[in-house]
Amino acid sequence: MTLSSPSLSAALAAALALAACSAPEPPAEPAAAPAPEAAIGERCVGLAAIRNTKVVDDSTIDFHMRDGRVLRNTLPHPCPSLGFEEAFTYATSLSQLCSTDIITVVQQGGGPRLGASCGLGTFVPHTPIKGE
Image (cartoon, rainbow, N blue to C red; front, top):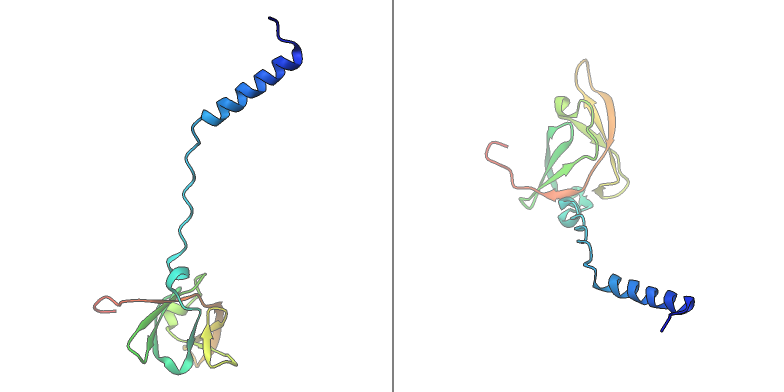
């Protein structure tokens, strides 16, 4: 028996479909894990809850809270001179400081002047190492 052209095409299509079903699937790409600060961080902290702050470097500020916690804020981009000056200011009309707020470095030499302004990051719980 001879297969006509439409029958041959149908048979070939069925064979290809069957082969595709039996072919092993390529391994799936692992999903990117969310950044730790996105998973456990706080976007805002109440101003009255902040006891004091400690600038660690140009990108990191530790917020020591009245309840004993330390919340580390890692800025999305380094803030020039923040680590050297170890002083900053901020202005907010709310009773909280949020990851959308901007801090400004306070330069001490020759009297206080304002330096670079930089955005805050998320507030993440931090356990200080002895000496921090």
